[in-house]
Image 1 (cartoon, rainbow, N blue to C red):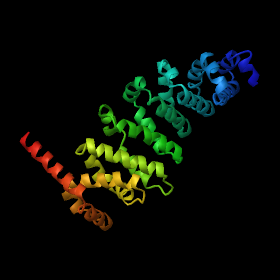
Image 2: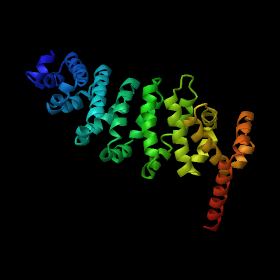
Image 3: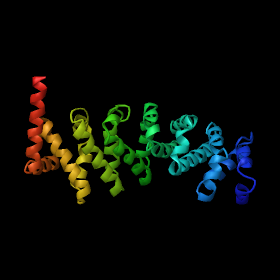
Image 4: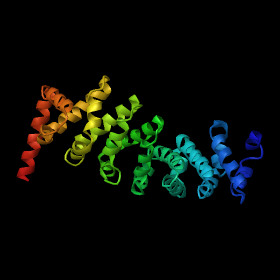
Length: 290
């Protein structure tokens, strides 16, 4: 019972995790995940060896055990990312869970990775090992909280040029994921805001690489965002659209959507359009001279 954690310590719980009996392992995984919610037990659990126990449990073939193990790792990452930063063995287990066929297991690991990617010492190594593709499985989740956790990390990465190449990697099609999530009927304000921010940031820094992809297969989402009533969502989306029209004007002129054409016509009446057009012309001239 709970008194054991403060009394006999964590050892019996860790011992149960290493049992050869699947039911014992599942009970241990569930108890660890639940006890981690209690702040008074948290440090004792970490210091008592639950990370080692979770690494062992994460090798189970039972989806129930893997789900509890992933949930426990997520809760540790939420409170003490530094504990995971020192345990590279644990990184590998989280990444393995994120690649599991079970969406439930993969999403628990994806949530843990979203927290771990906030830690500078872990960010690059995790991205090099494919963490971004795992977070993309969260964007596909029907749960708004999952979508926002993943998009928040993408937005954070988009703000730093050193990480742009991961977002531009075709293995993770950021445009396709943003388009899909924005077009969902129950899309939240938080998701709308993050999607608008990501599109604006990436077209600002990578207009030719990323901008071309948005024009090819992301304009439906961009139009939804640009027509939103909230300025925090609408303004960055309109800025993105203005930038894209200035750089890819011929592709917009032949676009079949009448509603998009009407929006483009509105954009061309703004001061921002004049500035973006001048900027696009300057870039083209520099490219020709080069």
